[in-house]
Image (cartoon, rainbow over all chains, first blue to last red; front, side, top):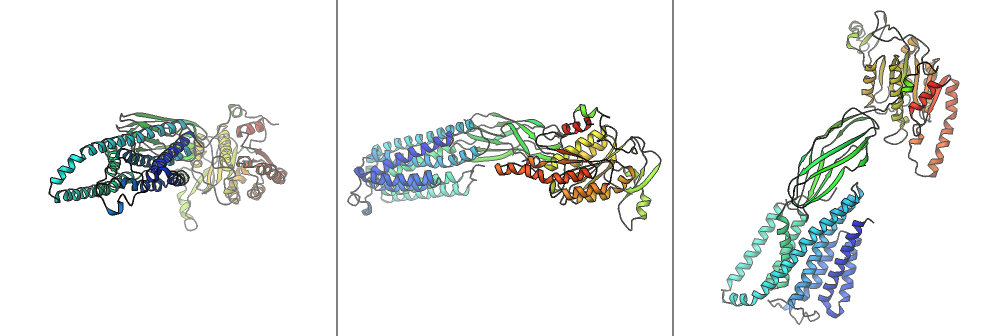
Length: 210
Length: 425
C-alpha cells in the first residue's frame, strides 16, 4: 500500500474512532462501550472494508446521538419527553453541541475522504508520480479539513450567541401575536425548499476521476 | 455548476434545520449550520480553468524506434483547486521518460505548467496525437470543469532501416546477394519496345497504352502499359510475406515488422547500388511495385508500407510468384523471399521457392519466436523445440538451391546479418 493511501486510511480510522466514542457516550453514558463497539464495527465495515458506504456510518452515528439531543428540546413533545429518554445522560448544551459538531464534522470529512481515496487509487494505477499524489492528498486534506473545522467553529460560535440571546428572544416572542412565528417558520421552510429546487435545477456533472 | 455533493449538503442542512426549528433544538440548528456554511464557503470561489495550451510539433517523418521530446505548456486561470492535465497518446507510442500526466494544486493565483516527456515511436504507421485533456476540481469537490486544448499532431512513422555504411560501400565481396543476370538497366527507359504488361502502382500515366487497353476492354478493364528495354544493371525482386501467419510476436515487434525492416533495408541497399528493384507485398491489400531504379522508387514503396496491414492467407505468396512470373522469366532477377519458418507459412514458402526455379534465390527466414513474451519456464523451453521443428524446412529450402539466411530479430539487427552475407565467401 502506498504512503498516501495509508495516510488516508489512518485518518479515516481516527475519525471513526472519535465519532463512535462521542456518539456512544451521548447514548448510554457509563455503558458507552456498547454503542461504541457497534458503531465502530459499522464504521470499519462500511468505510474501510466496503469503502463506499460512509453514509451508513454517518446516519447511524446521527441516530445514536439523537435521543440525547432531544432531551434539550425547547418544545416538549410526548415522544421525546425526559421520562421516555431517561436512559440517556443529561448533557449540557456546550457538551451536546460539541458532540453534535464532532459527529457532523467527522461525517463530512469522511464523505470527502472516500472519493479522495478512489481518486488516489486511479492516480496510482496511472502514471502519476507518487510525490505528486502525496502533494495532492496533503493539499486536498488541508482544504477539506480546514474548511469543515472552520465551519464547525463558526457554528459553535453561532450556537453560543443564540443561547445567550435565547432568553431575551423568548420573552420577545411571547409578546408577538401567535401567528407570526408560525408564518415565519413556514416562510423559512418554503425558502429552503426554493433554494433546494434552484440548486437541483442546476444539477451539474459529477467528476469521478479517470 | 453544482454537483451531487453540493446537493447532499443542502439536503443535510434542511434535514437538520427543520426538526431543529420545530423542536426548538439549538444543537440541531447548530449542526445544520455546518453544511450550510461549508456550501457558502465552497461556492465563494471557483476551480481554475485551463486558458491556453501551447502548440507542439513533432518533425515528421520519423523512423520507427526514434525518440522524440514533447513539451506542452499550459496556462491556468485564477481559482483554487486541482488541475489535472493529461496528454493522450496512441497505444503504439512508448513513454520513455517523463510523464504525460501532471497534477497541480493551486491556491487562487494563475499558474503556468509544463509537461515534458520523451516518446518512442515504436511502430510504423500514421498516427494522430490528440489535443491535451484537462480536468479541474474544486477543493471541496462541489464543482468540476473539463476540456481539451492545444493542437492535434499528425505523425508519420516510417519503417526502420539502417544499413551501416560498411555494407553500403561493399559492392563486390560476395556472390550471394547479387543477381546473376544483367538485363535490367539504370536511368531513363530506352526506345526499344519490350512488352505490354498490366499497369501496377507507380507506373507513369504517360506509359499507358490506351489503344491496347481499349482493345482488351471487353475482357478486362485494367490499363495496359508499354514497357521499354532499359540499359545497365541487374534486377532484384523482393517478395515480402506479410500475412497473419507471420505476425508472431507482440504488438510492436513481430514478424511483419521485422520483415518490413528487412525489406526496407534490402530495397534501399539495392536501389543505392543502382539495381532495378521491385517488391511484392503480400499484405491486405497485396501491393506490387514494379521493379524500377532510383530513390523515387524507394520513397514510393516506403509511403505505401507505412499503412501495411497483414493479409489473410499464406498462399498469397504463391499468388505473388504467379503474378510476377513473366518478369522473373524475362529478367532473371535475384529473388528474395522474406518470411517466417513456422508451420503455417512454411508450406507456402517452400512452394514459392520451387515455383520461382531461379538460380539465385535468397530466403530471409525471420525467427520471430524470441519476440513472443515468455511468461514462464515452459514457454522459454518451447522456443528451442519450435526452432527444431523448423530445421527440416530449412534443409529442404537449401536443398532446393536457396540461400537461406536465418534472422533472430530479438537479438540481432538485420544490418549485421546482411553485412555477414556481404563479407562471406
